Amino acid sequence: MRKASRVVAEVLLQLKSRVKPGVSTEALDEFAERRVREMGAVPAFLGYRGYPATLCVSINEEIVHGIPSPGRVIREGDIVSLDMGAVCDGFYGDAAVTVAAGEISGQARRLMDVTSRSLELALSEVKAGARLGDVSHAVEKYALENGMSVVREFTGHGIGRHLHEEPSIPNFGRAGSGPVLKAGMTLAIEPMLCLGKADVVIKNDGWTAVSADGSLAAHYEHTVAVTEDGCDILSLAD
Ligand code: MF3
Ligand code: CO
Image (cartoon, helix red, strand yellow):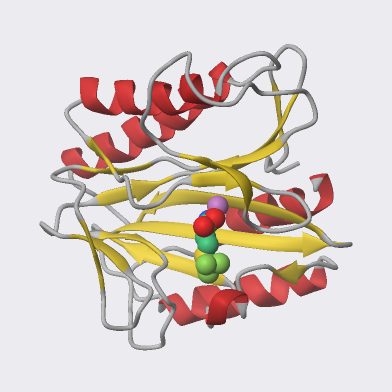
C-alpha cells in the first residue's frame, strides 16, 4: 500500500504543474496512465464498475468522478480536482487534490483552503482507540464553522486489497460514535465540500457528480494507516 500510494502521490504532484488553461482533461489522463504504468503500478479506477479512465478530473461545480475528455479544456480561474488510485502487487492507494488553474477568485481559494485543512484536521483525529465519528465530525465541524457545506452522498472508505473496503467514512457525524480505530487499519479519508448547498446531481454520463446549485466544490484525499499514536500518511510524495 505504501508503494501504490507513493505512486499516486508522485503522479498527482506531476499532474499539478500540468493543470493550466488550454490543457484538456484527456491530456492529463493520458499523462497519468503512462506515468502510473512506468512506475510499475496499474491504474485502479480504469474499468472499476465500468469507469473509463485512470483519473477523475472534476472542474468547478463538478464534485467528483468527472470523466476526462478531449473536448473538456481547462480555463483560467478553474479549480480542478484530480483523483487517482493505483494498485501495486494487489494493494491499493487512493488520493486526491484540488488545483487552481491560473488566477482564481478569493472564494475559490477559500474553499480549497478550508477543504484541505478539513482533511488535515480529520487526519489529526486518527489514532488507535479513537472512534470513526471523531474523524467524520472534524471535517463537518470545520466546514460548517467556515460557512461551507459537506457532501453527504460520497464518503471515504477502508482501502487495502480492494479500492473500497469497510468502513465507509462519512464527512459528517458525531464525535465519540462509530467503530473504534485499531493500529494497522488503512483508510482513505476524503472530504468533499461545496461553497453553496451540498445537494448532488449526477450528469447524463452516469458518473460526473455536480452540485445541484452549481456552486464550486473541492476534494482532497489521503490514504493513511492507523498507528498507536496517530497515522502514517501513505500518499505523500518523496
Ligand atoms: N476516490 C474516489 C473513491 O474512492 C474515486 C473512485 S472513482 C472510480 O471513491 F472510478 F473508481 F469509481
Ligand atoms: Co477514495
